[in-house]
Image 1 (cartoon, rainbow, N blue to C red):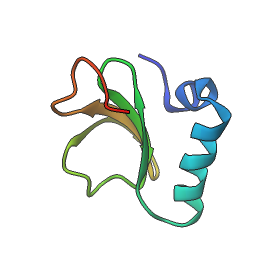
Image 2 (cartoon, rainbow, N blue to C red):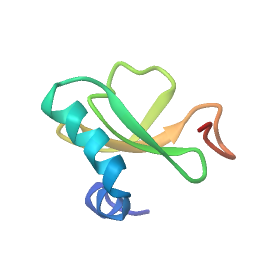
Image 3 (cartoon, one colour):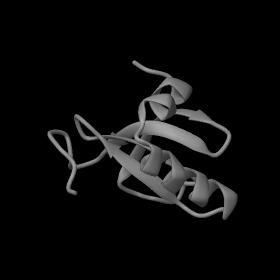
Image 4 (cartoon, rainbow, N blue to C red):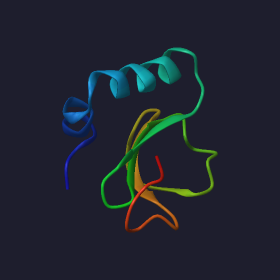
Amino acid sequence: MATIKETIDSLKEYERRQLMYGFENSFSQYICLPGGRFIGVNIGNVKHLEIEQSAGVWALGKIRGQEDKCED
């Protein structure tokens, strides 16, 4: 399993900007990853996200109900 930093480093530039905007403004943002997974910031109150790793306000985990894919 990749770390939070490795996952962030693998994102597209616009995806990193989206997460940083959420981080800088203290609101929830997450990016859907393959296999029904996510990387996000400030997502502690988002019920359908299951956190597997966290570092401060950053989290990596599974999206409940999205095991096969994420909606675009």
